[in-house]
Length: 286
Image (cartoon, rainbow, N blue to C red):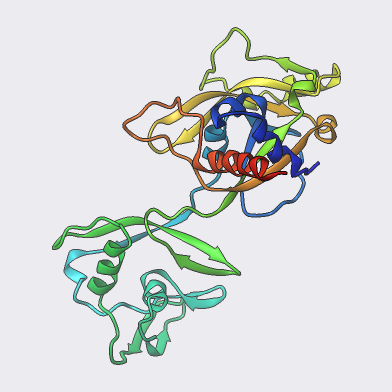
C-alpha cells in the first residue's frame, strides 16, 4: 500500500548510498499515485535494486522525425494538416506553437494534401523554423539538410514540441518490505543471456508462484542510449505479494549513465533529494 512513512525511513541512514540497499525501486511514466499492481502481460510487478536502474524505465519522452532539405530553407512552410482530428501537423504545427500566424484559405486534395494557402504577414520559412530548433538544442549546419528526432509531449490531447534535453516527469517508487518476502532466486550463480532472456520465462514464473513463492529474482537488461543493454537484477513480485509491501514515490525523470562513464552509479538526483528532505525533517523535529 502507499505509505508516505517509507520516505521518512530514509532518514535512518547517514547517506543516500547507505539507504539504497534497504529498499527496492520502480520507475514509472506519469505523475499518478495510483496503487502499484501486477502487469496484465506477465502477472508480475517488476522492481529494481537501485534508483538509477529503476529510472531508466521512465521514458524520456516521445519523439517525431522532422526533416528539411537544404534547398527548401527559403520556402514558406507548407501548412500540413492532420485530419484525425483536424489540426496543424509537422513543421507547421511547430510554427503555430512558436507563435507564427496561421495560414489562411487552406485548400486540400481528396487525400488531404495541401494544394494552396494564403500567406499572412510574418509567415515563416522552413529556415526560420529550423533556426528555432537549433535554439532548442537540435544540431544543424548552415547550408546542410536538417534531420532530427524532436522530442514531443502530449498534454490534454495536444502535442507540443520540446527542447532536445527535455524529459517528461515520471515517478520513482521507493518500496519497503521486500526483504520479508519469500523469493525464488533464479539469478543466483548465472549471468543474463540476451539470446534467452529471463523476463520472458512465464512458465518459470507460474511454477514459482504455484510453489508458494512471493516473487522471483532474475537477470534482466535495461536499454540505454549511451551504453546499449545494461545487465542488472530485477525482482518480479506475484500478486499475492503486493499487499505485503509498502511504498511511496517522488517526482523523477529518465536516467542515463554518462556516455564517458561506467554504469556503476546507483544514486539519482531525485533519490538524493528525497534522502536530504527526510534528514532535514528529522533534524527539525523537537
